[in-house]
Image 1 (cartoon, rainbow, N blue to C red):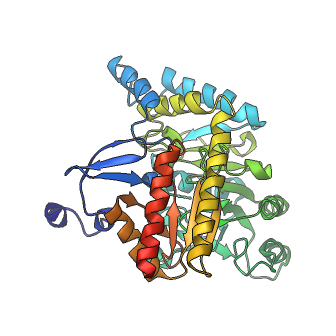
Image 2: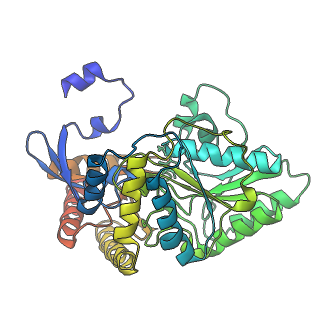
Image 3: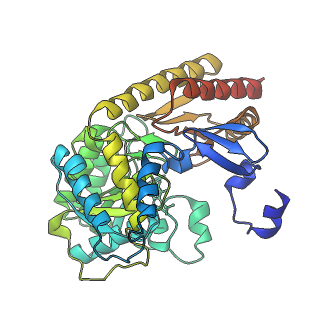
Length: 415
Ligand SMILES: *Cc1c(COP(=O)(O)O)cnc(C)c1O
């Protein structure tokens, strides 16, 4: 690992927590160069919902590569892009009664968020974006302006503007309805809050500590956006693509966002691919107003189509994720109540967080887990929450092994 310390910038992060070289991976298991076997509960921060080197998806990519079909064509029309849009339309959108246009953005989630914010400002002629405490939307200047984390905000090195933060669901305790607070601030012409171009929300805050918004709260936020003449944007970058048990994380609340932001597991294979789903009525772009060299890379579109065809043509996969999520939750809750009275377990579907309350405990537990052969990462305002994002395709045995390693690590740390 010494070569990485010498050659790679100080900015590197995960190779510090996991100081080994990972050479191969399959499903939920990663193998280090020196032959260790490691269970992966990080899943590329939610970019590998279908596991590493998913066999079915790989077959589609390998065939496409072998055929000399177009890989990169800016945003030119290709059969691969058409196939993706038609498949997504019929299998995902039409099945759920949703109608959207596709905007392929640059390959990062942050670029898709930038596009969503720009479009909202263009449509409404307003500047302010309402976002929420502990929200995370990426690190480019527009996206970080709408994100809460002080460490990342400070790294921008420039004043961040154009966003106002409101308390997320539960931020002020269970007794306070923060949607009501937001509504009052927007209705009051002298509240000091400019009318927003958009309200930007995650239904479960991934980086912010696995904070879960209630269905009623989300429905209120959508209604408040509508009343205020603002666009309602769901950032489904981390919680979409099945993570919470359904394809979109907002299905359980019956929401109909004006814009949905997707990235991370969209390509299904860890290839970079991001897009916006935008309602036709707000598609106010002029040709080329938001471009990028790598928009809708065809190889990533082929893997995205294969992922949809493999997992989303029936309800079986989704039901399996929900069952496995419940299993994980009850195991983690049992661990929480057995080993301490201040631990909390939060989440929805297979996005779960184990709140250790103390950063030292969370840090030592994840370090010990890695020694035992499990990678998990931390999130939350104080990095005190251990985040569980196993692949949605994980088998029960590996899932149980991973959870056992976590429990042993916690117990040994507490001792
Ligand atoms: C990861 C993430 C982003 C940023 O995506 P990048 O590809 O890292 O730019 C934005 N929003 C949410 C909710 C995320 O989890």
